[in-house]
Image (cartoon, rainbow, N blue to C red; front, side, top):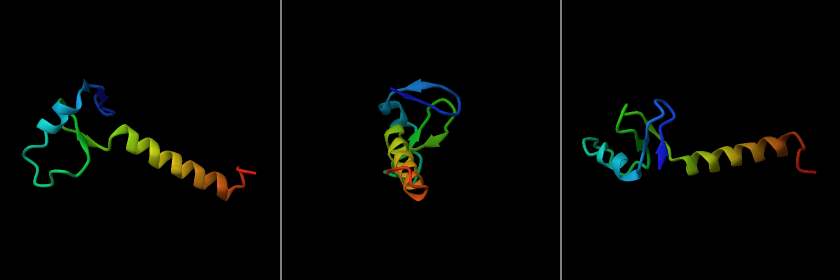
Length: 65
């Protein structure tokens, strides 16, 4: 299940894909909320990018000693 960060709607991945049928950029990797049409990256991808950013910041400020 996926929760939209904009409207809070909870839906599954199949519902997200059906909302993207009219877009010419199919396969972009974004999730589209069927309720509000907001497009956003999947949570796992966001978590991985955030984790990488945090690690870089720690290294910059000497946090991994």
